[in-house]
Amino acid sequence: MKTCDADIERKLLLTALQHKKPEARNYILANCTPEDFGAEECAEIRARMNVLMRSGKDLGDIAIFRSDPTLSEEAQEALACGRGSIRAASKMSQRKIKRMVQVIQDYRKIRSLYENAQIITDLCTQQYTEETIQQAEAALMEAVKALREDRGKKVTHFGRGRSEAEIKAWLRNQMRPEKNRFVPTGLPHLDKHLTGWRRGDLVVISAPRGGGKTAMLLQMVISQFRAGFNVGIASLEMDEDQLVER
Image (tube, rainbow, N blue to C red; front, side, top):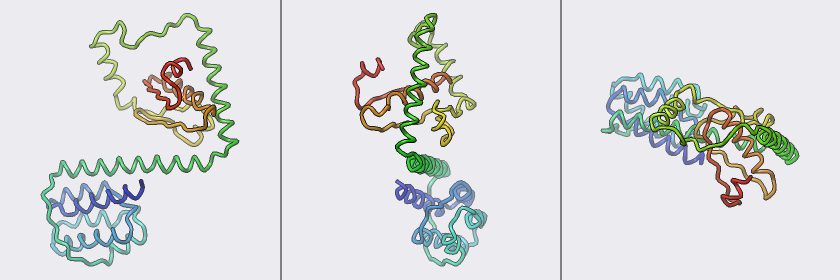
């Protein structure tokens, strides 16, 4: 995953460096930090940069890239002393260039989540995980008990009794930028390592059969639902009727 990500960043950035318009190259280099580039990738980048420098074109983009503090020492040295003779030629539109930047940023977010998940997995011992699951089960039972005692509330389909205009207004309200916030998972021990979930997150819970996956999942769902989020649940083990019952 990480190798694929770095390879995509390298190819997109090299393409951007070929762009004729200085402002397009400026945009790319100001928004991309290829911290995962190795020696071979840096050699290609510095070669294209040297062509741009010798051509007398706008050097603002090169300055931005070379002063990037996130580059490794190897990359900094390669960019400072490299030589090359690759011609710069591209007819890509600035709109497509900006789209490439978005792709790079999306891949970087995915890689960050993946690496954080690995860190959390390494931190969680078997005993620690079991304690977290037990706490999730206890919190879930308390929530179920509270729902059973509150006989005054009725559960109905979201769209029942609402007009199309009312539903669209609700959706617009939910999609406002301020709604894009983090929500606690409902599990204190897990929240110590995470900031919570956000709209559109995909959460995968894996454990042996009977390991408390459903209990943990439902506790997270309850926390999301209380915060006004719609949540979809899918189980790879139990059928739909059993999942609804749980």
